[in-house]
Image (tube, rainbow over all chains, first blue to last red):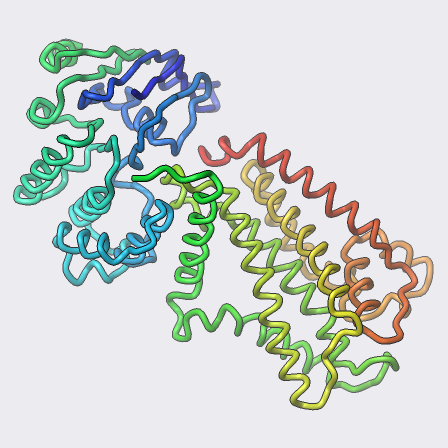
Length: 216
Length: 260
């Protein structure tokens, strides 16, 4: 269970605090794969960052006993001047994995980067970057994966590979997915959270959520 | 995934940041990590040559190179580098904050520990070099020197953290510090002992806690030097107050700082 208790998040601006999320009260059950939906700026990525523990609610708190991945977004935290391999090693180390060779090789083959894996991450194209960060997170066994629009940039064959990997992961763990593609959501999720007007609603049925989203 | 204790996580993170700092800091240079030691080493050698080998013998109780060694090494590494590296911790490590295990505090801790280690490594290498060309680089009381060094290092870390946190809200901090950098070298009695400074300037300079650090190290290092101003409780109070302020500032604003 990931429980959000009265979570609010605002950013101070010169016009005063700008609320992105306001008093959100949601339980995300352990057996659901959840889609986060909402228009641009509704707070999807912010909510992801809050759940991922890399940003913090201004009010309220988030309680969970699960191993949650870092938020997998295009801009996620890789050190640009370090190579793909060095970044993998760093992430292994902070997750307490001492023997990093296995994950390194997994990432190298899964991401299909080849030589680029030994080159600095700052030189990657956005497609390569999405392949890379997706591959890195698949190297670890989390309970919940936070996937933020990462599949939208990859090419067709890699998309297929991602979807296969996600389906396999879903047998033992869950995902929380941000996507603007309704087909992706339908394929991978069996619940949804719709963010609108600073509020959040939990839907047991994806179709109902999509209907609501499209009639916003 | 297996649950780890908070301590185990912190240990893993500090090790990871340490390796990453080693890789990223001088990774692009031809000699790579050698620069980590080489940079302060060259600086020291230069200062020893410029100030030390003039051989004016102005301080009868110690060879000039040793005098520079004993003062500039702690000042350069334990004060300047430790403070600077802590101050720049956030810019250098923002991309690490995309992982929940990594906190800004870990970066501070790692960088402080690294500079402390660097002090010892560079000190030993230079000491061997000085011994080789015929000087006696051994302090009179090494343990005492080391413990004064620890206080100075603690003070520098505290100031670094404090400036880093304040600097996020007022960018001017860095500008002012850059301006103060050079005068501070002379106001901290690095290249002269306080016995050379006449009153009333002596008591004015003695307001600067760094002067006390320099003088205390000198007392413990040289066989016969007795400082007219050195006061350990003054330096220690500065260190403790600075660290308390730094920790309070950090605790109050670390989440805000990450959002900027």
